[in-house]
Length: 139
Ligand SMILES: [Zn+2]
Image (cartoon, rainbow, N blue to C red):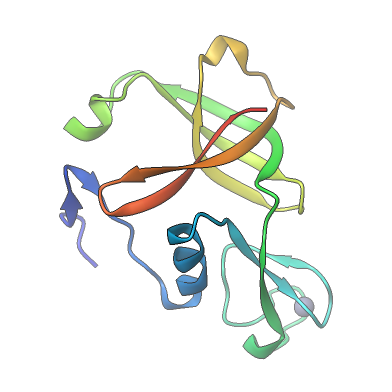
């Protein structure tokens, strides 16, 4: 893992093996998550076993998320930590409570004064460096 691996100034994610289908989904424009077929619980972030019932990896199934959810919490960053982030500041990040029942951390696009906890949001893909990443916009 390297913190200095960047592309056009954007830090590029470290791709944990368990989450490889997630990254492949993003490349195809899809937001994916794991569900355990043994206990039917959503598993997020990606695991190699079910944290709810201890089922093995072969019980974890990747499914496409709707991309929709509600804003759970958010914060606006006024000064970016690196030149790339400074170039988009101010920007908002937060947790989205996905309709499938898991919490997803991402950038939330739009004017912060138009957002509130509980606002309906939906994902769209943007390109950061070599990587497609989901950001959320007000629905
Ligand atoms: Zn399970």
